[in-house]
Image (tube, rainbow, N blue to C red):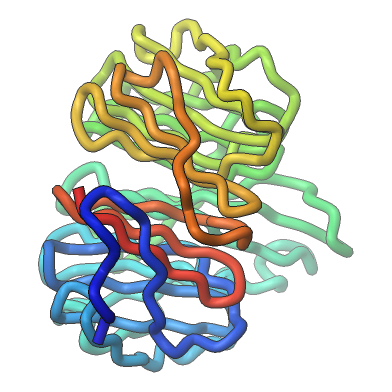
Length: 307
């Protein structure tokens, strides 16, 4: 059990028995049920709000990069070149689609981010590489709830790292080389937006069709109020790479990154203040479910926050 979680409004470390494996992703369905995933196919689940954790078997030794639930029963998990699916609330995970090197002329596929824009339609982004050099992006979609997956071409061959949809029509993708792509037509076509950057963007979060934020290398934090037609760089006073951003409402946003960095904004992302994180480990992902926040990172780091 978690020993007396720190005082209200502080990040407190939680032990979940992961050892020294890096944790890459965290997702909570509600206040009770959540998952963390990481290197070596590690997956752990809680049913009591993080009080106790039970390790689950997924059937992979690849790093788990993302977890996302379309609804309470159907969830998706990315590990290496494979999409896994659960139809029973995360009790069992089965392989839905694997992208082999034979399909890509000997190149290796790595999948990073999965999101659903509606009950049937979902998207996954990643990269295609040969000898550790990225040679193309990959974008695949399903229109039958994850039963089948089809590749879609994008206007960027650079590594695509994160995708976000705010309704069935509007979505954004960010990635290497300052790449920002957007769709207005449910993913039929994707167009480039101007970020003004060359560094990698690792995460994007939109509240509605207008307001969004993206984070990346060397403390990069971008903000838009017009759906990405223009992006403004926000000064954060940190130089480390930021890896994940989430807004809980119109005003309150959080970002995490390397070296245990946690930033908070209470004014729609115009200004950001660094928070005490109790760790120097890299933080790869943040996830808030209402009043409870979770951050995960290097060497099994799990932090919990109560608003």
